[in-house]
Length: 114
Length: 114
Image (cartoon, rainbow over all chains, first blue to last red; front, side, top):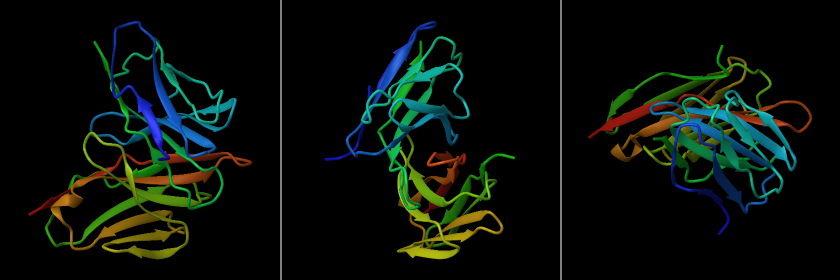
């Protein structure tokens, strides 16, 4: 079955530690996105990528980094520079062109700082 | 002005009533508009998309788009308790070349009371 897989589902980070969230899709989609969601809030865009080896900052990129070495994969690293990383992280993908191309989401990773 | 704004909610309606959810956007060049439903702790799922002015109906759901007013809405007829969720408005905008960006509003929490 085609879809997006995020792992792990739950992740705990110690202060000052970098962690990497995985996102893999087998939908052959060009574009991939990372969003952050805080309790009771909407989705805020962290980074997005339209094509392999290229990505753009979203609205809240500080303290995060990404790579897009393969079309299927778009991992997100939460660095120690991100002071308040506890949140629900969602990865999405979509076809690039066309107006009616919906975004498909992974199941999310809940990151907690301990 | 935020790129995508939704009525803040929460919104509470009795079972069987019509729920009306609103969204405005700032980028006049936005091309596509999506409504997602998100249950607590889960990832968003697509309800409808619209890209032409006017109404689009799908079962109990009707999306309305007015590009001149930069306004999109979602009506839920015969609301059911299972419709209780957060509804997210998303806007797809062209950022130059083939570079698209998908931006979400903060969401509106809907509660349907039996």
